[in-house]
Every structure is written in C-alpha cells, then in structure tokens.
Image (cartoon, rainbow, N blue to C red):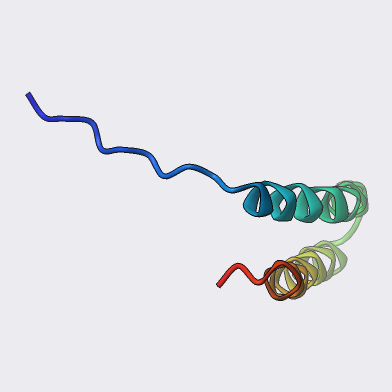
Length: 69
C-alpha cells in the first residue's frame, strides 16, 4: 500500500488571496459570458481576451499584495 501524500495546509493569507481574486474576477466573468451570448465571433473573442488579460493582471497584483511568491 502506498501512503497518502501529506497535503500542505493552506495558510490564511492564501485563503484571502483566493477569495480576493474570486470576488474581483467573478463579475468580469459574468459580464464576459453575457457579452458572448448574442454577439459576433470577433466581439466574443475580444471579450474573452480582455477577461484573460484582466485575470492575469489581477493574479499578479494579488500575489504582489499578499507576497505569495
């Protein structure tokens, strides 16, 4: 039998950073979803690209703010 690998505990700072990221990105995800429902391929692609760009910038900001590196 293999022993289960011990899971690393999630620190309170990591929990805060995930919650912050979720709270700030969830509305953008909803807006992106609504924008892509009845639009052309070009506008849908632009909305998705902008969401990805925002997610990358926000992740970088949150990591810097909570010093998670």
